[in-house]
Amino acid sequence: MTSRERIQKVIRHEIPDRVPNGLGGGEVSGFHVLSYGNLQKLFNLPGHAPRINTFMTNAVFESDMIRAMEGDILLIASPRLCKGP
Image (cartoon, rainbow, N blue to C red; front, side, top):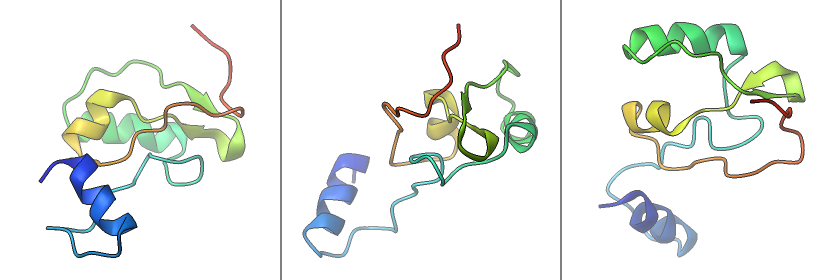
């Protein structure tokens, strides 16, 4: 089952194959920037500096991290994201 199918099932109040993984998919469902660096090491991902969501200094989960965690939700845009390179 794809992430899209999994989320659609939940929205329709149906039972998916597993609970959708939303870690990093919202402004408050993430990790502090320092913890995010440790998570990158754990998954053997390139240790680039994370973008920061100004709310509670959470890191913005990048697509490589979402894939490594088998995540289902990706934060596309937020008015609280810091502007950066």
